Amino acid sequence: MPLCSSSKRVLPGDNCRVRDPKSGYEFDLSSLKDRDFPIHSDKYIYHLSVCGGLQRDICTHKDTGLESVSSCQVEGEGKAKIAGMANQLLSYVGDQIILNYTNGESCHKIYTRSTEIYFSCHPDMHPGAPEFLKETPDCTYLFSWPTALACVPVKTTSCSYNDGQGHSYDLSPLAMDSRNWEVEPSTENADRFYINVCRSLVQQGGSWKCPSGAASCVKSGEQYVSLGQVESSPTWDRGVLKLKYSSGEACVGGNRTKSSIIRFKCDKDKVDSRPTLISAIEDCVYTFLWLTAAACPLNSVQHDNCRVSNPATGHLFDLSALTQGGGYTVYDPKSHRKMFRMNICADVSNAGCDPDTGRKHCGGGGQVSRKLSYKDHVVELAYDGGSPCAANPDLKHNTIINFICRPPNMVSSLRRHPERLRSYRPDSLIHVSGYYTATDDTVGQDDGSPDFYINICQPLNPIPGVTCPPGAAVCSDPDNGPPVDIGRTTSGPEINSASGEVSITYSSSTQCVADPAQNYTSTIIFTCQRGLELGSPQMLRLQQCVYLFEWATPLVCSDATHTDTSGCQLTDSQLQFTFDLSILSGQVQVPVNSSIYHINVCGSVTEPACKQSAVCRGLVLVQISPPRLLGSARP
Image 1 (cartoon, rainbow, N blue to C red):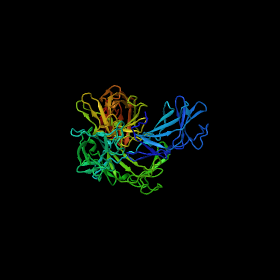
Image 2: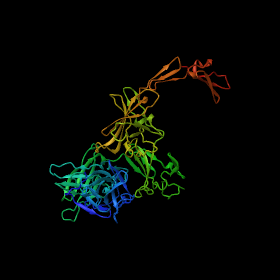
Image 3: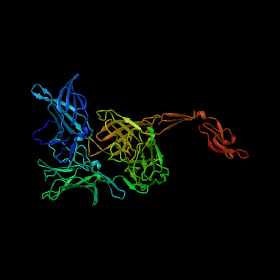
């Protein structure tokens, strides 16, 4: 219950503003002014305004002079009570902002009505809405209001690094948005260290007192001390990635501030590790070592001149041939009146935009670039720094173009079962333009099952109305948030020698909610189901951080055929289908240049010189030489 505690320091503010003493950040609720917010309870309707009077003609039954009513309690038709007069005085108590309206109408003959609104941080509420909590015995009406306006801005920085030699690194899987990393405990030191990566610490409840802007913090006894704030991106230092946080609390002597240095070393086997304290020089500079797979190079490279090579095979992709003088025009599938003009590794001519722009829609979609990237088996071209976004002018439009191989050629990624000497070809399921969908009601979503979009062995194609992350091959689209990448890279189909099942596993870079030390993966298990239909994926379950799908299809059934020698029929047991060619019986002649071919399906040619063959060739004009035998009839 958000009630004030006398042990907490109350900091006042005016003009609908108040300052956080820890971070120095000033909260401003003035954007909520000049609006009325009705709240329904069991018996009453409460009308609230923030830092000003109500806009509606309500609670006007009493002459309040120059004062304005900010809180009004209404029961039934026209029975209203003033529950507080307007003011702009905010208080900051603990981690909440409080707005208190007093001097309402009398209550129980001994009290006057008042209203208290408790604003708490909720990053996703813009601006949120008040909720009625209760009425106290002294006629004070309590409301809670989760809103992003009560949040201290999170300081972040880019978590990626490129060494200029085609190697890229990304520490963002270690960035936490719901909790913090705790450093491995030491037997020699009882202090507890908390760290976040590339962003400030996540504020916790209880006795948590780490300064709101800190990215590294130590708890020593009951005291919390900032060891630095986010200020710069990762750098490369002596073979490892280094992240430095500075501007913490003052060191002894007052000439310097505390700082933290985190050194990330690649270890592919460390997927759930934590940092370790290495040194604390003069209790001022703290150094941590973190052995983690997140510090290993990404499976991607970047080159210039519209070319890039596969780091594993060395194959060079050159897309310069796709550059066109007039560029390309792409229409929005949902609205053909909206079109995108773009070019590849070059600017767009006659687009009505600046000449350095590579793609435009209602403004610049990004500055032209000739730098191609090879990421997770996909060639990618990115145009950054376009025109400001309408929704948020601080952000700019970007464009990402993925280039996919057509036609598909996945033979090299297949696995052969040596005992049964048959090949499995899930590559036949690749969608060159569409996608597969799968749904399930048992994956732990309280407000509805997510939809799943899948492609085989390559990224998803564009999905109208669904913005799956570029490069994702398996995408989850929940009802209460944006689409999430749950699988993109794969080594291809694998076969379980014990069960004979064929499966494909995709890894992703999306942090798992159940275990933040891991990322989500998706596994599709293919089972044999004979018939003509290729089947579709079905969601089985979410098992910790692994999404499991099942796909019944004839493509993984043993390939066997049966020929009916009497009826010109062939039965494919994999498809459970019989091909009947008897309708094609009968002799046909096909002239080609100076020759003529005699053909009979499911029978022999009647020409005596063809010797009962099914196909033979002879001359059209000169019939001196007999026809040449090409094949025998074989029903």
